[in-house]
Image (cartoon, rainbow, N blue to C red):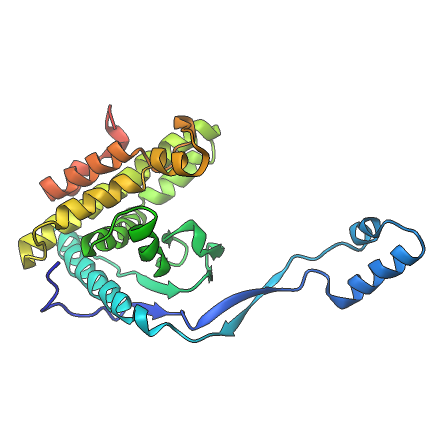
Length: 282
Protein backbone atom coordinates (compact mmCIF):
# COMPACT_ATOMS: atom_id res chain seq x y z
CA UNK A 1 0.00 0.00 0.00
CA UNK A 2 1.14 3.55 -0.71
CA UNK A 3 1.04 5.77 2.35
CA UNK A 4 4.30 7.62 1.66
CA UNK A 5 2.57 10.99 1.68
CA UNK A 6 -0.07 10.04 4.21
CA UNK A 7 -0.59 11.64 7.59
CA UNK A 8 -0.82 9.92 10.96
CA UNK A 9 -4.13 10.07 12.80
CA UNK A 10 -4.38 11.99 16.07
CA UNK A 11 -7.13 9.64 17.23
CA UNK A 12 -4.93 6.73 18.33
CA UNK A 13 -4.92 5.91 22.04
CA UNK A 14 -1.98 3.69 22.93
CA UNK A 15 -2.66 1.56 26.02
CA UNK A 16 -0.12 -1.17 25.28
CA UNK A 17 1.91 -0.17 28.34
CA UNK A 18 -1.14 -0.35 30.63
CA UNK A 19 -2.03 -4.04 30.91
CA UNK A 20 -5.15 -5.15 32.79
CA UNK A 21 -4.72 -7.82 35.51
CA UNK A 22 -7.50 -9.68 37.35
CA UNK A 23 -7.26 -9.56 41.15
CA UNK A 24 -9.54 -10.55 44.01
CA UNK A 25 -11.85 -13.55 44.11
CA UNK A 26 -11.82 -14.16 47.86
CA UNK A 27 -8.40 -13.28 49.17
CA UNK A 28 -6.34 -14.73 52.00
CA UNK A 29 -9.15 -14.64 54.58
CA UNK A 30 -11.42 -16.87 52.55
CA UNK A 31 -8.52 -19.25 51.86
CA UNK A 32 -7.76 -19.60 55.60
CA UNK A 33 -11.44 -20.19 56.33
CA UNK A 34 -11.41 -23.08 53.86
CA UNK A 35 -8.33 -24.58 55.54
CA UNK A 36 -10.07 -24.46 58.94
CA UNK A 37 -13.08 -26.21 57.45
CA UNK A 38 -10.85 -28.98 56.11
CA UNK A 39 -9.29 -29.42 59.60
CA UNK A 40 -12.73 -30.06 61.12
CA UNK A 41 -13.70 -32.46 58.32
CA UNK A 42 -16.01 -30.03 56.49
CA UNK A 43 -16.03 -29.92 52.72
CA UNK A 44 -14.25 -26.59 51.93
CA UNK A 45 -16.44 -26.13 48.85
CA UNK A 46 -19.42 -25.73 51.20
CA UNK A 47 -17.67 -22.92 53.08
CA UNK A 48 -16.66 -21.18 49.89
CA UNK A 49 -20.21 -21.42 48.59
CA UNK A 50 -21.70 -19.98 51.78
CA UNK A 51 -19.11 -17.19 51.99
CA UNK A 52 -19.58 -16.35 48.36
CA UNK A 53 -16.64 -15.86 46.03
CA UNK A 54 -16.69 -12.24 44.82
CA UNK A 55 -16.14 -11.44 41.21
CA UNK A 56 -12.58 -10.54 40.29
CA UNK A 57 -11.79 -6.89 39.73
CA UNK A 58 -9.28 -5.57 37.24
CA UNK A 59 -6.44 -3.15 37.81
CA UNK A 60 -3.93 -1.58 35.44
CA UNK A 61 -0.36 -2.78 35.53
CA UNK A 62 2.43 -0.95 33.73
CA UNK A 63 4.38 -3.09 31.29
CA UNK A 64 7.06 -2.34 28.68
CA UNK A 65 5.94 -2.05 25.06
CA UNK A 66 7.58 -4.09 22.33
CA UNK A 67 9.68 -1.80 20.07
CA UNK A 68 9.18 -4.33 17.26
CA UNK A 69 5.50 -3.32 17.19
CA UNK A 70 6.19 0.35 16.55
CA UNK A 71 6.06 -0.02 12.78
CA UNK A 72 2.72 -1.80 13.03
CA UNK A 73 1.40 0.90 15.35
CA UNK A 74 2.50 3.58 12.87
CA UNK A 75 0.81 1.71 10.00
CA UNK A 76 -2.43 1.48 11.99
CA UNK A 77 -2.30 5.24 12.52
CA UNK A 78 -1.80 5.87 8.79
CA UNK A 79 -4.70 3.61 7.84
CA UNK A 80 -6.97 5.22 10.43
CA UNK A 81 -6.10 8.67 9.07
CA UNK A 82 -6.99 7.55 5.56
CA UNK A 83 -10.36 6.20 6.70
CA UNK A 84 -10.98 9.58 8.35
CA UNK A 85 -10.24 11.45 5.13
CA UNK A 86 -12.37 9.08 3.07
CA UNK A 87 -15.44 8.93 5.29
CA UNK A 88 -15.34 12.66 6.04
CA UNK A 89 -15.64 13.24 2.28
CA UNK A 90 -18.34 10.60 1.73
CA UNK A 91 -20.42 11.99 4.59
CA UNK A 92 -19.89 15.56 3.36
CA UNK A 93 -21.16 14.63 -0.08
CA UNK A 94 -24.35 13.24 1.47
CA UNK A 95 -24.91 16.32 3.64
CA UNK A 96 -23.83 14.65 6.87
CA UNK A 97 -20.99 15.17 9.35
CA UNK A 98 -18.61 12.33 10.08
CA UNK A 99 -17.60 11.98 13.73
CA UNK A 100 -14.13 10.44 13.85
CA UNK A 101 -13.71 7.44 16.19
CA UNK A 102 -10.77 6.72 18.47
CA UNK A 103 -8.62 3.64 17.95
CA UNK A 104 -7.20 1.97 21.05
CA UNK A 105 -4.06 -0.17 20.92
CA UNK A 106 -3.95 -2.61 23.83
CA UNK A 107 -2.24 -5.76 25.02
CA UNK A 108 -3.96 -8.88 26.29
CA UNK A 109 -7.03 -7.37 27.96
CA UNK A 110 -8.80 -4.02 27.78
CA UNK A 111 -11.59 -2.14 29.52
CA UNK A 112 -14.07 -0.45 27.19
CA UNK A 113 -17.55 0.97 27.59
CA UNK A 114 -18.72 -2.43 26.34
CA UNK A 115 -17.02 -4.25 29.24
CA UNK A 116 -13.76 -6.05 29.92
CA UNK A 117 -12.55 -7.84 26.78
CA UNK A 118 -9.65 -10.16 26.06
CA UNK A 119 -7.53 -10.01 22.92
CA UNK A 120 -8.71 -13.52 22.01
CA UNK A 121 -11.96 -12.06 20.63
CA UNK A 122 -9.96 -10.17 17.99
CA UNK A 123 -10.34 -6.52 16.95
CA UNK A 124 -13.72 -5.03 17.87
CA UNK A 125 -15.74 -1.81 17.81
CA UNK A 126 -17.62 -0.56 20.86
CA UNK A 127 -20.55 1.68 19.88
CA UNK A 128 -20.98 2.89 23.47
CA UNK A 129 -17.69 4.82 23.41
CA UNK A 130 -17.21 4.96 19.61
CA UNK A 131 -13.79 3.34 19.78
CA UNK A 132 -12.07 0.59 17.80
CA UNK A 133 -9.90 -1.77 19.88
CA UNK A 134 -7.04 -3.86 18.51
CA UNK A 135 -4.20 -5.92 19.95
CA UNK A 136 -1.37 -5.84 17.40
CA UNK A 137 -0.67 -9.52 18.10
CA UNK A 138 -3.73 -10.21 15.94
CA UNK A 139 -1.70 -9.28 12.86
CA UNK A 140 0.84 -11.97 13.70
CA UNK A 141 -2.04 -14.41 14.05
CA UNK A 142 -3.29 -13.36 10.63
CA UNK A 143 0.11 -14.12 9.13
CA UNK A 144 0.68 -17.45 10.84
CA UNK A 145 -2.65 -19.01 11.78
CA UNK A 146 -4.89 -17.52 9.10
CA UNK A 147 -2.22 -17.29 6.36
CA UNK A 148 -3.39 -13.80 5.43
CA UNK A 149 -0.26 -11.59 5.38
CA UNK A 150 0.18 -8.23 3.70
CA UNK A 151 -0.41 -4.56 4.47
CA UNK A 152 -3.79 -4.45 2.82
CA UNK A 153 -4.99 -7.47 4.80
CA UNK A 154 -4.15 -5.50 7.95
CA UNK A 155 -5.83 -2.38 6.60
CA UNK A 156 -8.97 -4.39 5.75
CA UNK A 157 -9.33 -5.40 9.42
CA UNK A 158 -9.28 -1.76 10.53
CA UNK A 159 -11.58 -0.66 7.71
CA UNK A 160 -14.10 -3.36 8.68
CA UNK A 161 -14.27 -2.05 12.26
CA UNK A 162 -14.58 1.51 10.95
CA UNK A 163 -17.49 0.17 8.88
CA UNK A 164 -19.21 -0.65 12.18
CA UNK A 165 -18.59 2.94 13.29
CA UNK A 166 -20.29 4.18 10.11
CA UNK A 167 -23.24 1.90 10.89
CA UNK A 168 -23.36 3.34 14.39
CA UNK A 169 -23.36 6.94 13.17
CA UNK A 170 -26.18 6.19 10.74
CA UNK A 171 -28.32 4.53 13.42
CA UNK A 172 -28.08 1.09 11.82
CA UNK A 173 -26.39 -0.53 14.83
CA UNK A 174 -29.11 0.66 17.21
CA UNK A 175 -31.87 -0.69 14.98
CA UNK A 176 -30.10 -4.03 14.62
CA UNK A 177 -29.52 -4.45 18.36
CA UNK A 178 -33.13 -3.58 19.09
CA UNK A 179 -34.39 -6.11 16.55
CA UNK A 180 -31.98 -8.84 17.71
CA UNK A 181 -33.13 -8.51 21.33
CA UNK A 182 -36.63 -9.62 20.26
CA UNK A 183 -35.55 -12.56 18.07
CA UNK A 184 -34.74 -16.23 18.67
CA UNK A 185 -30.99 -16.86 18.66
CA UNK A 186 -30.82 -18.44 15.19
CA UNK A 187 -32.72 -15.52 13.66
CA UNK A 188 -30.60 -12.99 15.57
CA UNK A 189 -27.48 -14.69 14.22
CA UNK A 190 -28.75 -14.20 10.66
CA UNK A 191 -29.22 -10.48 11.32
CA UNK A 192 -25.72 -10.32 12.81
CA UNK A 193 -24.34 -11.86 9.61
CA UNK A 194 -26.01 -9.16 7.50
CA UNK A 195 -24.54 -6.50 9.78
CA UNK A 196 -21.03 -7.91 9.52
CA UNK A 197 -21.23 -8.37 5.75
CA UNK A 198 -22.26 -4.73 5.39
CA UNK A 199 -19.16 -3.75 7.38
CA UNK A 200 -17.10 -5.85 4.93
CA UNK A 201 -18.71 -4.02 2.04
CA UNK A 202 -18.01 -0.65 3.67
CA UNK A 203 -14.36 -1.65 4.02
CA UNK A 204 -14.38 -2.11 0.25
CA UNK A 205 -16.07 1.27 -0.21
CA UNK A 206 -13.27 2.91 1.78
CA UNK A 207 -10.56 1.19 -0.29
CA UNK A 208 -12.20 2.13 -3.60
CA UNK A 209 -12.60 5.81 -2.70
CA UNK A 210 -9.18 6.10 -1.07
CA UNK A 211 -7.52 4.57 -4.14
CA UNK A 212 -9.45 6.86 -6.46
CA UNK A 213 -8.44 9.93 -4.45
CA UNK A 214 -4.91 9.04 -3.40
CA UNK A 215 -3.82 5.94 -5.34
CA UNK A 216 -3.13 3.83 -2.24
CA UNK A 217 -3.39 0.37 -3.83
CA UNK A 218 -0.47 -1.51 -5.32
CA UNK A 219 -0.24 -4.79 -7.20
CA UNK A 220 -1.31 -7.67 -4.97
CA UNK A 221 -3.14 -5.53 -2.41
CA UNK A 222 -6.62 -6.55 -3.49
CA UNK A 223 -5.64 -10.21 -3.36
CA UNK A 224 -4.35 -9.67 0.21
CA UNK A 225 -7.67 -8.18 1.23
CA UNK A 226 -9.69 -10.97 -0.37
CA UNK A 227 -7.48 -13.56 1.29
CA UNK A 228 -8.06 -11.94 4.68
CA UNK A 229 -11.83 -11.78 4.17
CA UNK A 230 -11.85 -15.45 3.20
CA UNK A 231 -9.60 -16.55 6.07
CA UNK A 232 -11.87 -15.20 8.81
CA UNK A 233 -15.17 -16.52 7.46
CA UNK A 234 -17.30 -18.34 10.04
CA UNK A 235 -17.11 -21.63 8.17
CA UNK A 236 -13.31 -21.70 8.11
CA UNK A 237 -13.02 -20.48 11.70
CA UNK A 238 -15.41 -23.20 12.92
CA UNK A 239 -13.67 -25.90 10.93
CA UNK A 240 -10.32 -24.89 12.45
CA UNK A 241 -11.60 -24.92 16.02
CA UNK A 242 -14.13 -27.79 16.04
CA UNK A 243 -13.64 -29.73 12.81
CA UNK A 244 -17.21 -29.13 11.63
CA UNK A 245 -19.47 -26.26 10.50
CA UNK A 246 -22.84 -25.13 11.91
CA UNK A 247 -24.35 -22.52 9.51
CA UNK A 248 -27.12 -21.54 11.97
CA UNK A 249 -24.40 -20.42 14.40
CA UNK A 250 -22.76 -18.06 11.89
CA UNK A 251 -22.49 -14.47 13.15
CA UNK A 252 -20.12 -12.93 10.57
CA UNK A 253 -20.80 -14.83 7.34
CA UNK A 254 -19.06 -17.54 5.37
CA UNK A 255 -15.76 -16.99 3.59
CA UNK A 256 -17.54 -16.82 0.26
CA UNK A 257 -20.03 -14.25 1.54
CA UNK A 258 -17.37 -12.05 3.12
CA UNK A 259 -15.32 -12.03 -0.06
CA UNK A 260 -18.40 -11.29 -2.19
CA UNK A 261 -19.49 -8.26 -0.17
CA UNK A 262 -16.01 -6.87 0.24
CA UNK A 263 -15.58 -7.08 -3.54
CA UNK A 264 -18.93 -5.38 -4.08
CA UNK A 265 -17.85 -2.36 -2.04
CA UNK A 266 -14.44 -2.35 -3.70
CA UNK A 267 -15.85 -2.53 -7.23
CA UNK A 268 -18.63 0.04 -6.78
CA UNK A 269 -17.25 2.42 -4.16
CA UNK A 270 -20.83 3.25 -3.20
CA UNK A 271 -22.59 2.93 0.15
CA UNK A 272 -25.85 2.16 -1.64
CA UNK A 273 -24.32 -1.06 -2.98
CA UNK A 274 -23.93 -2.36 0.60
CA UNK A 275 -27.59 -2.94 1.50
CA UNK A 276 -27.16 -6.43 2.92
CA UNK A 277 -30.38 -6.14 4.92
CA UNK A 278 -32.61 -6.16 1.85
CA UNK A 279 -30.49 -8.51 -0.24
CA UNK A 280 -32.36 -11.68 -1.22
CA UNK A 281 -29.07 -13.59 -1.44
CA UNK A 282 -25.97 -13.01 0.63
